Image (cartoon, rainbow, N blue to C red; front, side, top):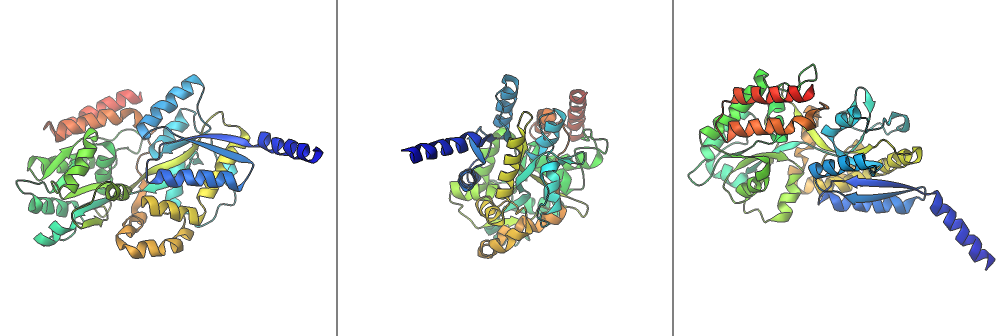
Length: 397
């Protein structure tokens, strides 16, 4: 009896000593299953920390819930934040600096991937699932018309013209900020100027919108706003349109939901010689109020996720980028089974963080509203961007 009592007291002591780390995330399937499995495995393999994960909706829903929790005093210690939120988290004093906890990291991380979670020279988040956009296209229609896969935007326009019929458009133009920014960056432009302020009236930004507007006005492209994202996917799958730019992570989602009635083409993002490919995706942000033990536990969990085998599992589920070179040998069979899957990693050389302006999350709507006015309402592209610029600068003041 005494031994049983001693064992009970010992186990109770371990339980009391365990640091609980509330973790809110916004990861949908297929990544959700892998993430939650990794949480369970991390909790089982060690006794110092217990990560308690909770799904709080998509990125925008999660942000609203986080803001409410911060005001009410019920925020988690660890939050799955989109890359563009990192700088905002720093400015608002939400994100804790983590460099002091990151000693002895493996030297095979891709530097530009780690850079996505740094701001003003310090690390404020830990990247876990990063991705780039790709060009999805109907390979059957391209083959039937003898069209080469576009490598430039001029070639996209030429292909869209050839593909357009009375029943279908050659291309889908999305007026959400991510899609527009991907086009701008790939054409050598930037929505953010050297001074860190909105840069919507820059000639390259204006030219990017004019290019997209021209496709729509000539009848070669279908314009969809962010609320119509599901219709854009349906347009493509139902052969109502034959090209679209989207994150590579949409690929497994697309294939899991509906049978694709044609051979799916997947190609690198079209770009100019000075163009870049935007890196977006999820990071782990440790929030203010977290204890020293919770910070150490959050970093320990991230290190566990960054083990090569775990990176490989995440990549195979989501088609995201592998964070470390050590994961590549474990992905050999995955890439060999379908060489198209290498399209994301083939763009790493040109990949940089998509947005780092702390105010970006505030002026998203102003820019998207102006994009829709130009692409759906026919407003002059330059005037629409000037309107968005004025609104964004007023917000940033």
